Structure formats: C-alpha cells, structure tokens
Image (cartoon, rainbow, N blue to C red; front, top):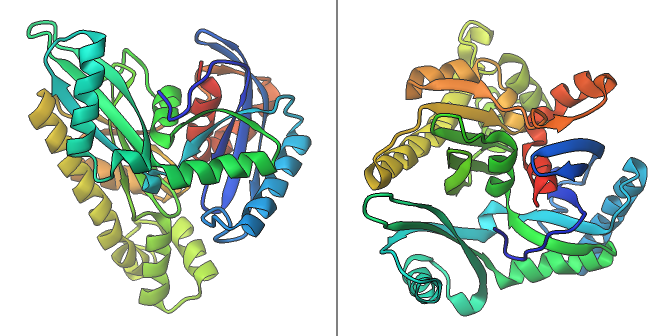
Length: 342
C-alpha cells in the first residue's frame, strides 16, 4: 500500500533526520539479490526543510550518492516521514468492494485528524475474520503539502517516484515473516520512534512517537552538563549500564526510554482489546537501538522476547559484504523494505 503506487524496477530511498540511505535489489517474488547500497550524511535540519534552496541541496546529495553507489534506475520508492502521516485501523462488516470504498472514505473522515481534501490517503484490507466475516482495514493518509514537497525534491533530483509509503510498511516488509509470532517493531531513530505491530508478516498497526535518540542525548547533555557530541558518545558507550559512571547516563536516559515503552505498552493493550491478541516479541531496529543493555531493559519491562531485526535475512549478497551489512543493519530496515516493494 502506498500514497502513490506502482510496480516497476526501482530503488529504495530512506530520508532520515541526519542521513539518507539507498538500496537497489534485483529479483522478486521473495527472492532478492543485493545490487547496490549506500548512505550519506546530511547537514542537520536539511531533510526537515521544505525550502527550495534546501531541497535542491538535498537533491544534489542524493544525486551524488546514486552516482557513487552506481544505482542504475531513476525509479524510486521512498517513505513519508511518520510525523506527516496519520493512520487508523477500522472494522467493517463484510461488503462489496464498491460499498467498502464508500465506507472507508466515511470512516477516514470520522477517524483521521485531518480533512481529506488536505490529504492523500490509501487503505488496505489487513484480514477478515473467518467466523464473522468482519473486515479489518488500515487507512493511511499524508498531508498533500508533504507529499507535494517530496515530489518537488524528486523533480530536483531528476527521479521518477513510483510509490510513497510509510517507514512502517518498509520495516514490516523487511523484518516481518508470516510464521513469526505477533511482533512489535520498535524503530528508534534520531527524532522519532516508529512503532509497528506485524501479524503473520502483515503490518496491522503503526504509530509514530516524537521521542527518540536525540531526546536521550539532550537528557544526558543537560543532566551531566556535556556538549551534544560528548553526550552522544556517552549514550552509545554506556547506555543503560547502572555500574558505569555511577549510573548517571542510565538515570538521564531512563525517563525518556520509559516514555517510549509506556506508549508501546498502551499500543499493545489497544491491539489486544481490539483484536484479542497481544505482542509476544519486540524487534529492535533504528540507529538508537544500539544502546547498550537496551534489549535487556525492554525484556524486563515488557516481559516479552526481544531481538534485533535483520533486514538482510531475505536478501542474497556477496559474502565479502557480510560484516559491513551486519554493521549497518539497524539503520537499513526501512530502505531495504522500500526496495523490496513489488
């Protein structure tokens, strides 16, 4: 599902707060080979700006990265930032496709905190109850302003956008498997934490939280009176250890992390109330998921299995790339999923 949709040869482009990532795959139908990948840092605040000058500067960085990685197509699938996306999950009685489309538009108007005339929206049937035949549908909408801004960026970079979707759909595609237990993906990035529930390999619920790694860094900076770079170093070196630096880094981070997990627990509870199932596994991804002892902390708090996601598990690649790909795996879950779109 995407705000824009298509199905041709393409590469995935993930535009993060501090860097951009690209991946191109060959193959399909569940059998993929890695053709190209790479990333580039961007100046702080550049990817959040909609100004023409900043977008042209970002387009230049993208163009240079594509040349460096030797990506051979102009067709791109990218992700709309979670802060610009609204979504809801609804249940409707069994009905025809034409009736369903009308019902979904009505439900979207009632349940999304945005006027439909100001948005582009799409929907997808997640599943159907075999007993009641009730249909569960996810509706996703993005502001027209943000969609148009991204289309302008692609124009400056001379790219052909064939699909825009959310980061959660990309992560669900690269990290979810039909045979897995009900899982919650926690993508802890720089500015946002994306929470996605995946059932039988299908994205079933998603939320974007405006608290993530940078909030932890700020808390350390203020609590320990360190500059930003020092605070970031301490965060990634000491993490949630309570026996290093007298636990000062832990004490600074813990309230921020508790905020993320409290909201994740509420999302799990909502899902259980709506669909009668609760999360059995948490899959960690995102740059800030590397925090030392994070998995252990989440396991003790949420009392579920916790593991790190590997977006390369469905991709064939040269053995010589193995160490590099494992190293960058937490940051590449979204863009691999975008590249996997068929």
